[in-house]
Image (cartoon, rainbow, N blue to C red; front, side, top):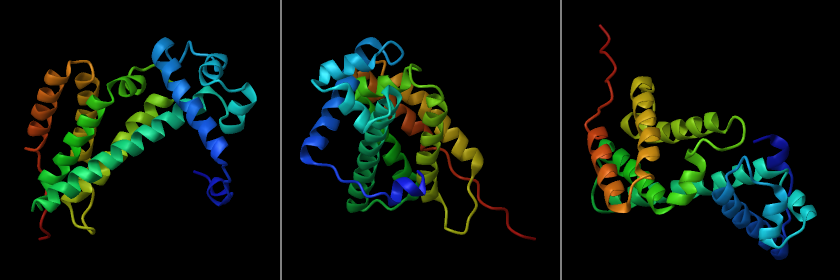
Length: 206
């Protein structure tokens, strides 16, 4: 995010917010129905009952719509994992390893609950460069959770980060292609296996 975007004041009327929301809802429907590559701005506008001008007032095009939908999904996922960890702490859980995998299980549960939305982002049919962004964002999410393992002055365990983020990426693509019962069983099995991983401890200085 650029400094200009951060510092620029944003004034959105209730009507403008409603239009933006309608456009995003319409885009999600169109992308799920025909795929991102085949979707057109005109279809989104028609579905939303809006004008082309209003779409370009809020977004730069269909790729921007897609990225906005992804950011909203990621925010919901972040909220889910934060709630899961907070609830675990409230029950008395304080083991960093179990807290991390509580977050991972919550992330997978969110993917199952929002199966159609998740498929939209993990199908490979997105804007140019999106797959790289998807991997990077999941790596960042994993890095924040791996941080639960270590003290502030300890280095990142890059190997653990790579293994967990890679496993989570594969796990998401698998659970969303199964029915709810099987998906949740697989999510439990995956996080159960991941929970056996432990970070390498820094070697003692001689």
